[in-house]
Amino acid sequence: MAVAEPPQDGRAPLGGRRAAPGGSSPRPLDGVTVVSLEHAIAAPFCTRQLADLGARVIKVERPGSGDFARAYDTRAQGLASHFVWVNRSKESLTLDLKQPEALQVLSDLLARADVLVQNLAPGAAERMGLGYDALHAKHPRLVVCDISGYGNDGPYRDKKAYDLLIQSEAGFLSVTGTPEQPVKAGISIADIAAGMYAYTGVLAALLQRQKTGEGSHVDVSMLEALGEWMGFPLYYAYEGAEPPPRSGASHATIYPYGPFAAGDGKTVMLGLQNEREWKAFCDKVLLQPALASDPRFDSNSQRNAHRGELQAIILEAFARLDAEQVIARLEEAQIANAHVNTVADVWAHPQLRARGRMAQVASPAGPLQALLPPGVQSAFDYRMDPIPAVGEHTDAILRELGRGTEAIARLREANAV
Image 1 (cartoon, rainbow, N blue to C red):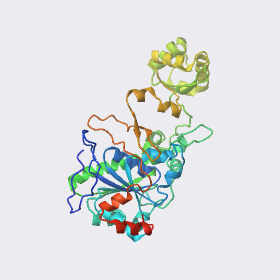
Image 2 (image 1 turned 60 degrees about the vertical axis):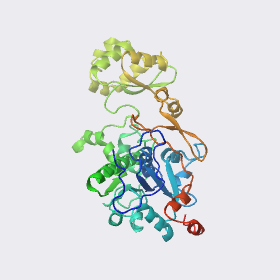
Image 3 (image 1 turned 45 degrees about the horizontal axis):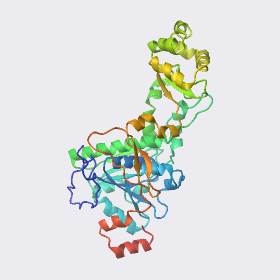
């Protein structure tokens, strides 16, 4: 993916671009500079992944407090868990964009950048002259990615959008939870979905720029991103058909497929996909081969219709076994299964450890464990650089942009940086 072509519109390149460390292979986005007006999750998740691939990401933050996600909690050795997750390998530049001098710094930065990502409040970027049309006229090769709740037009454009609200609007809550109670996802799934589509949208725009010579506009909404992930229930309930029921941690339409308690109080997750597996499950796991041909359970539709009766049989059989014994039987029968892990279990997961998927990143609080990005790359190593302190790179970036000591001092005295 050769996207790091040199400027062709008279721009001076921004100095200090990070590349792969000495001796390692170049990364796909080495030489690409991303400026991000970001907060919370969606945009920072997008730009962190660009940084993973080698891009230089300059995170613009408020002077003093920075990204408000820095104050969500103090669970990661005094740092906020959300912030640690999505902000490694970035540089922090503080700017008060309400001040003309600070806005001029941003303008100078964008003149040398390849990508702008922003998830400010609806309309805020346009009011500062940072809408796509205005920026494209000045910087035709700049890729501009806007992330919002509902998109840059339409009747919901200016509506406030938080992750849980989008889960609700996208119908996610209608298929998640128990029959009695809808339940939100335990992670910021709408933000994550939007961040993923912004990330891939920026990559596509950089590839497109190689063909056309011009940047483009990527307009990503949380609603559309999570709506895409709702594709199965949307089609399942197509043209007014009955939607899939909320079924807790069990599969909505396949049974048995979900969590079952073992005799030691632990829970095992298992899933059957076809009639061959159902017969093996009865024979080798339940030790009741005759159950396979019981008319109540001899097809998935029948098992679905008689969930309560089948659940009682399974729980009675599992009550005589501990979780590891259940899993051993499931493995012997080649039935898909999983431990129901805690978060602590995931940090110590033997498969992640065996594949070397744990690393460390530096931070203002010292070294922290981190999962490597998904996907083992044979051609390059992911960037796993430090999590920045608020404004840590402000002076260095200002000097790159031609500000001298006196100019920097004036900006600081005016609280513009």
